[in-house]
Image (tube, rainbow, N blue to C red; front, side):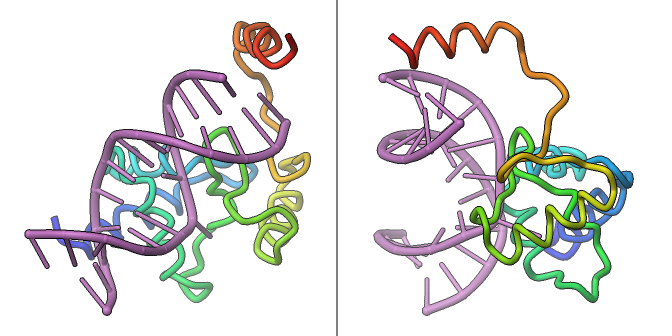
Length: 113
DNA sequence: CGGGTGACAACGT
DNA sequence: AACGTTGCCACCC
């Protein structure tokens, strides 16, 4: 598989993200048939630029985390676009419906003491 | 070949 | 929850 083919597969996967939803870099990589190459997704998005007309704002880090530094121009632009599609966010992370119930208590157990 | 880098991910604390 | 570590992988020197 050539680099160009990998990039094309990634762009297809990104274009397939439905309006009002989002997917992580790792998830996009898997959908493109490239498991474990999350970093490649970021690389492709970066070099694709605006003229590619990709819904890049629907791609987030693991768990809905915005990959850009909090408060940066890019981060604000991404959150703004997501908000226009009805995707709510808090801080630098899009609001996830639900997290694993078990993780909550274990987490609390660890960082309180 | 070898080291640095990054729009990442998973895990531990 | 916020960080630090590690593992990863494609690229570029």
